[in-house]
Amino acid sequence: MKNFTFFNPTKIIFGQGTIGALKNEIPAGKKIMLVYGGGSIKKNGTYDEIMRALEGRQVEEFSGVEPNPTYETMMKCVEKVKATGCDFLLAAGGGSVIDGTKFVAAAALFEGDPWKILKTFGSCVKKALPFASVLTLPATGSEMNSGSVITRAEFKAKLPFKSDLVYPVFSVLDPMKTYTLPAKQVANGVVDSFVHIVEQYLTQPAHAEVQDRFAEGLLHVLIEQGPLALKEPENYEVRSNLMFAATMALNGLIGCGVPQDWSTHMIGHELTALYGLDHAVTLAIVLPGNLTLRKQLKHDKLLQFAQRVWEIKSGNDEHKISEAIKKTSEFFESLGVKTRLGDYNLGEEAIEKVVAQLKSHQMIKLGENGDVNLEVSRQILELCL
Ligand code: NZQ
Ligand code: ZN
Image (cartoon, rainbow, N blue to C red; front, side, top):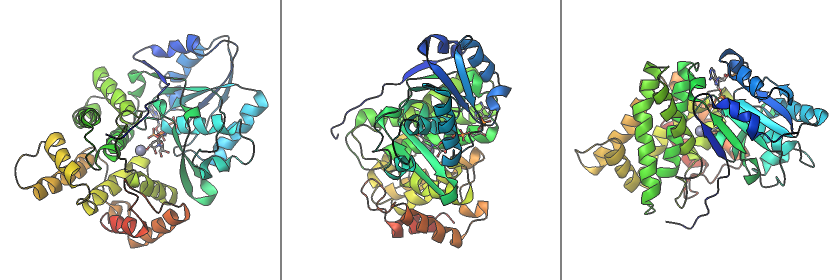
């Protein structure tokens, strides 16, 4: 196991009826900016519960954060935060709203051009406003991590940034608020969480038994509970397990002391920026091709994945590995998420465009060993046609 520092300051408040905790968790005297998306929080009671908890407090609102939040929209929020003098942000929604709020937290106090926050992947962030979240879509782990992904629409650039200053102070996770999710978003959430785990687990052995067993346990939960959530949308225990699994998949724990890949995500971000595909859809397309092309490098962990996660016992090592990759694709498809570029009417021409985008965003040394260069990315995409 490699040396590591594990730091995660986000308090998680979990369970039915917990939105009321906002009342005591947000310090008195703060002027709050409530940030949300296209209105789902108004339809499922989240908005009303937030407003009840914040009765008597100073609350401003910013709505209209789109899926894959844009720099352009979030800069409007920055202006409103500055104009109204808000000093605490509250994100209510899925990963897009939370990511957008993280950017606003950093940009509102940033001296200079805020685009630099993305250009430097967050290293230039020196201060940020405090913020919290009310999560309504289990998927990204943004509710308990320090990452954010923002799209600059005019440049078709979707870039990540990270900073210890943008961990949420606390996040409220009420599984009942996920009942209204369309099946497509439930499936996306399962796929996204699955791939977060895989990007931290399917690399090379690091003798990290704790992290490996945690990762495998979380994958088992997703494989078991994901289809159940689609079948029984109002099963509280299923929703709870899915929600906690998604948070644990990307809160830093399973990534401690192990190599991490993230090439599937970075290639996927370009597909979203160019073609507007949902984040999870891009992952379902890229992951199988990525694992297939790099199966020699990942041989030992792929075998472990085949045996421990998919419980494949028969055949030689090569057979087990290709079966595991096949079962992974089949799992995504069984949730209703298609796994080929062709399923979205994309072909060879898309590959050229994605590779050009990767080049312009300096995504030229991806993967756990930094050896996923532009040519390797191209070969991965060829396998995704
Ligand atoms: O905008 P509203 O009306 O709220 O509707 C949303 C949106 O249309 C809807 N929704 C959310 N909760 C709902 C609901 N509809 C009904 N009932 C509910 N309870 O779902 C739609 C999608 O929401 P979005 O927030 O875009 O989805 P998700 O949580 O999957 O977030 C995706 C974004 O997160 C980034 C992705 O790149 C993408 O931009 N990621 C962030 C990460 C991080 N911060 O660590 C890591 C991830 O890998 C990912 O890159
Ligand atoms: Zn993701």
